[in-house]
Length: 321
Length: 205
Image (cartoon, rainbow over all chains, first blue to last red; front, side, top):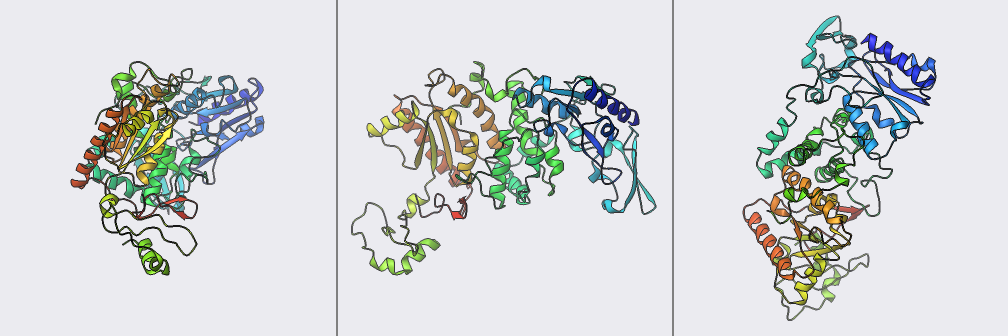
């Protein structure tokens, strides 16, 4: 990936000088050697700071609306699909974004690396290339984990490792897996009896502290005034409680229906380890099973819920129990 | 008695209230009283009505509301546990409203609109049809029994159908309650900044 890093730096400079980009959005080194942070480059010198590694889990599409246009942005498969949703909704126009696609074999879940206390880490090897192992050096000891065991859960279930939309692709395209088992957890939850299911959700969202990290990091949550923040009328209480937290999260999941591409950043950003992705997976499954629709694939088409068809009649739930 | 009723009963205001000599409702009809802030207290309902399952019905102004009105005008008998919110079109109903209704303690929610093809705004109910097709199965996933939410197409002339739908929903909800599948209503809900909602408290409605 050192090669990818170099190519991205060149591509970023080209975007500024040849494509007329006002800024380039990517990642640069973070506070620790194994962390990255979003970087906004407006000069060739600043482009030299761009890096790429298996720690680049963030979804940079979240910045595209506010970025000075035209903007160049580095996107993985998931990020590119989020961009497609934004294009569908005309939050950004196609000619205003220069898409630098980076095929992705999966991002590392830093939370899975041992030892759990990252303050003791001295070095982490294997992130910036496709090495089969990630090795953490802590207090003189080496802790190894197979790369496949250290991936983010959302990456294990990913069906689109290669961006479907791009102006330039940096790196080799990666074939999608045969069966990503995206809805295994949905089946497990549906196997619970109804009241137990309700109890499960309330237990998960008891922990929510309404920090809004999930909302802030989501590329699709771009409402200037969120329904949950409006004071008059008050839609949902601000004070955390299991019932109100569940209402907030369900409304957010519903407002992302047909739009969410499961980039998983909400879950990664959550400080309370709440399995946020689980809420939306059922909606995604219904979309596929009943309508054969998948979010984030067709930049020209209308959003799913902004259209209708005669064939909807077959799937109508009117009048049924 | 709820805390609110206790306050009313033990305050000086209770002594000033006239007991109703004849009332069609059983028992605890206490009339209106005053809280120390000068606010008027809503009259507590008798136990039988308080515990009856509650349905919130979103009715579109052009068809289903008119149909419900016809049921009323025609003196058709149907359970009283339904409260109506009139909307211009069934498409006005963001399923987030349905989620909020359940949060506030509604046992059942009905969304009714014109029949597809007859929408006053031409296309509204086509959007409703599509979004509810995804929303309703998801409600089941959240642990809300599918019998608690219904989408119906009810035209302005279908007074009987409206009454029938409400009858069915009330019966389904009673059945759910018997089976212990209806979650308990919330004790209180903060519906506006700093103010406890009286929508869901047992003594109102």
